[in-house]
Length: 273
Ligand code: PEP
Image (tube, rainbow, N blue to C red):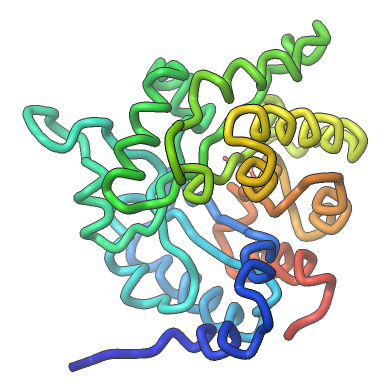
């Protein structure tokens, strides 16, 4: 049998508390609609480096077509999908179910990304259905929320995000531990613009409050909240220093191992090991 023990696991056994490991910064690359098999070399390089960067939990969400190959080529990092269909199966030409993604090697699904909300008209209720489907299939979910520039300018950023969370997050016993939230201001995605650290902190504290109301104090405190939107190697340390930021969801800068590793190293505190 061709069984390979994930090399990072040996460190889990040496640490006093697994719950501490759960608090490692979580850095997730979203490749969006980029990548053919030629890009697997980047995934391999990221995976090799992750072996040394054990202070950080690293994952990639490649396009569907690369999930299986990425899982095979990159044995240490998490591999996930960028979306899933809410139904188990059926007459949905061109769609893909959570169970199929799990079977292909995905351990998590991103749901509610603002590009899906904008391009496919997905509403909060759709996002929740997808999150429920992914969890039922045995995956974790990263639920994305974020305000537009107009909403921020109108002083509504926190209320908009709170409404999205209440409408999109899956509910139920034990669900919180399967959930990560990604706060991604729409106006910061792919633009090179970012909120201030103070604004990120304020939003993340507000998201934490919603999570604790929804899931209870303890379970809500354990949900990681990622920041996403123009995270790069040179701003990652600053953005990750904001209150309640548990990692980053990274688009453009995750497409090469070089830039993605710059962010991962920043998340590790600037050092390997
Ligand atoms: C994203 O699409 O989730 C994202 C954060 O993109 P970028 O890092 O390119 O802004």
